[in-house]
Length: 147
Image 1 (cartoon, rainbow, N blue to C red):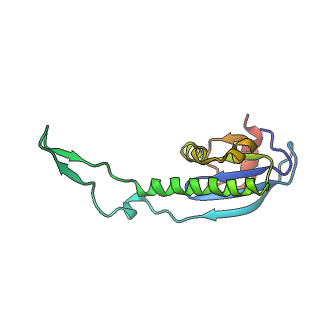
Image 2: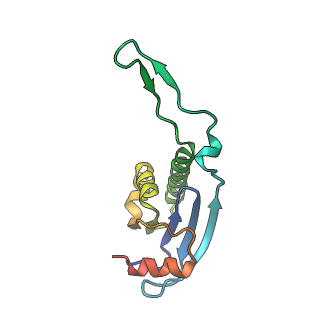
Image 3: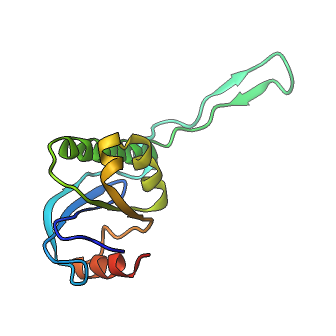
């Protein structure tokens, strides 16, 4: 993938966002960290208090169970929406011309739901991988290897 000089690169998942700037060129990337934000998001079992509810019906078998809310996933989706909002604010301030986003497929899908038109117009590429826990050199290699 071509990552121009001064391109903005966001590596995110549902709990962590890393904002980089490419200080190198398209052949020799040099990602510099601009911002790191991580949130604590315990497993769903630690956030839920009760089992799913049940209702009784006069029709059929008489019981209906509600689907349990996955609070952990809801928080990850909210974090992705917050990341998209930060991108919108930076795009509206003209902080970047080119944007590359790296995120796992579910997070990438959630980000896409919230992209502002200014963010979408500056988007040069996306990679559907979870690289938030990887060293910068591995992120650079993944960017160069991506088509």
